[in-house]
Length: 384
Image 1 (cartoon, rainbow, N blue to C red):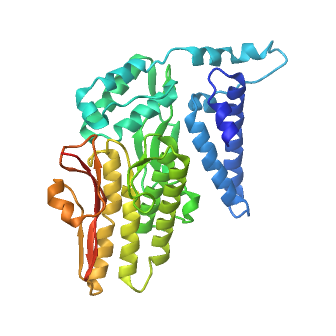
Image 2 (tube, rainbow, N blue to C red):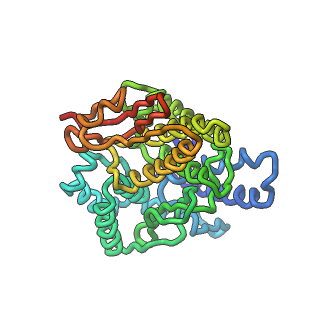
Image 3 (cartoon, one colour):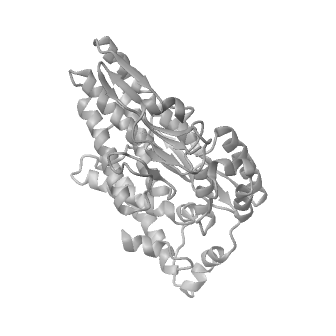
């Protein structure tokens, strides 16, 4: 996919435009074929290919316009330039969302959560998604205020919400995360859907149980790693000495492998006769999920923070089962002043960005005690 990505991301290229159009057609054909042959030996490989196509097409501009508009090439078409001129002119135009971008970066309250962020997008579709991804990391009250303001401003630019041009993430419920746009500004949106298959690497199908929520959260994590270049990891088993950017392909590969392995471990131990084995596997997966972080760390009460907390709350049911089986179990998420929690944790990492000085910025792993076995927690904390 390396050369596909390279061509797709070239600005003002007619060849890139033709490739995008072809890939949209290929994706549609494969989706329809998969519906009619779900038991085909190539179905799993086809799902993998569709996932890769989704990632490729999400990264480029004007996905919505390409999916809605069909261009017919006839003998009356005088040249490629005549056909491609509207698209080329639009690509050359100035970013319509530029002023909104600048307003975000000048908001002092927002800067407390995003520090000195720099936008990388070079077209409106990517910029729309980058701005929205940024707001998923800040307290929901702040995010909602900005989302409403942004929708008001894009409406003045001649854009309206589009109910169709969404990238769907697999989950246990349907929920709009942020809208798509059509009109003068065209951009894709993002939503949760219970009609989308979990990431095929997890090798799990919807079964209506607690495992579905975890499969959804892990699938979302895996998708966001491809969509958002700001993500880092702090998973101790991969690298205990720092917070590493997932733009590094080696770090990304190691973290993704560890996350998937820990999910599969949860699958294989779900019905273990020894509930303590199940609990340890769940604690390890919880750590992997919470070790996917931003710098500065996402706020606990942001969209990201609440999604991670939703996954963590599933530990409560396993803890209760262990207690009913006769185990003495303690679980303690580590938050607040670092001086109050460091005796419960180990191999913590100190940050000099974001958060409140002297306080925990992210609880990567909860403290746990199973009978006499102590499993220390792990945190990221802001230096005093």
